View 1 (tube, helix red, strand yellow):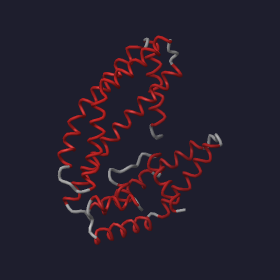
View 2 (cartoon, one colour):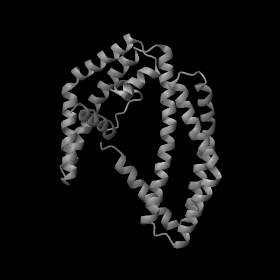
View 3 (cartoon, one colour):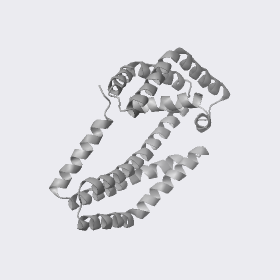
Length: 252
């Protein structure tokens, strides 16, 4: 049951866009909490303080989290049934946003104050590195999604399909070493941080130095992809992207 509640809380943070920068790490439990404590070299006293703060947060906001869990279950059931009342329940969840944000912020700040200045700096560095990795993953998902909509909605000619296939192969061959280097640097950085090796700072700088090349490679591929499409197909693609963004935008 506890795992189920935690899963719902994670879903809630995604649904109503309440993710705090380091909140999930602070509030994690099990192996993830152990990794968090290990990476920051928390003392036994700090670990106990963190546990106490998590327990206090759960106790103080028990009803709020229970109400959120109930609303999420209700929303899921209504959506599964295609019930239009789902919109009302979603609005009720959105109305809880300020309370959830305030509770998480207070707990986050209390836990952040347990850390030393060095631990706070390490946490900030780790967040930035995860953000870089997530950015790469988002770009790859966007590329795959674009391929899907192109194949299903834009009525490509056989010639266009052949052009796009050739474009993908050319891009892969041209940037294969660049992408491999970025993957290797991310893995090396993760390993060095796990062992608290000071060389992690140098590897992070090397990884950041690759960012402009990676962004340029993606932009070039995107521009060449658009050049294969007709003006009508580009308009259809822009409409599809706008619709996706609208669906992702939280209701107000």
